[in-house]
Amino acid sequence: MSTASRADALIPPMVRHGGRDAAAVVLAYVPFGVTLGATLGRTGVDPLTAWASSPLMFGGAAQLVSVQLLDAGANTMVVILGALVVNARLLLYSASLAPHAGGWPTRWRWLGAYLLADPVYALAVGRFARPDHGGDARDRLTYYLTVGLTVWAGWMALTGAGAMLAGVLPASLPLQLAAPLTFLLLLLPMLTDRAAYAAAATGGAVAVVASGLPLGLGLLLGAASGVTAGALVGARDA
Figure 1 (tube, rainbow, N blue to C red):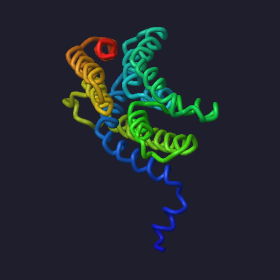
Figure 2: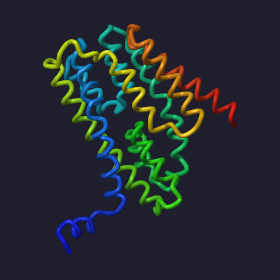
Figure 3: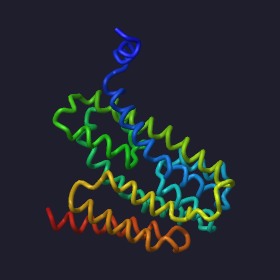
Figure 4: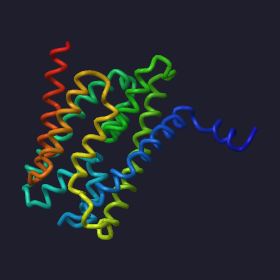
């Protein structure tokens, strides 16, 4: 048996699958994570404080909105409300994953809630919904945590690199478009039905068109519009 084969035999299958799937996502997120980190670094907020929002909320869209609001002098309640509006979709993600997490211990559910982000949800629900996923509650938890922690580590590194590069990137780069572009990217894995397409098209279009609004309101408006459009189409199709 080769060294690689012996190493594979020592690593649980769900860890291998989760690590491989998450690594592909992190690689795809390189330009967006670095751009978002650079956008954070160019605000008037202290760079370390801006980057610290990455582990604090682990969500690119809400993170960018919060830092932009702080940069504009918004008060604490406005910042919190903005983050909550942008992250409202996570409630739907949680409801979708709940049947698959029924056998998870409470402490791991709390960690799972923290790690819940768009790519983590997309990978997890995609595997759990397959009839051949071949795993029990423990296998599903192992896969979820592997994906979540890998994406988390990758996102910290990407946004940190972007924040450090903010001062050397050309000023002509349209970094103000990072928010709507990230919003559009995060929606792509969710395109599975008419409601998802309606939410993506509406939310993405509104976020891009309204990207020039102050206080990050363009992204807030895009998020609210996308959620509303998806809910309306979903109710009509039900």
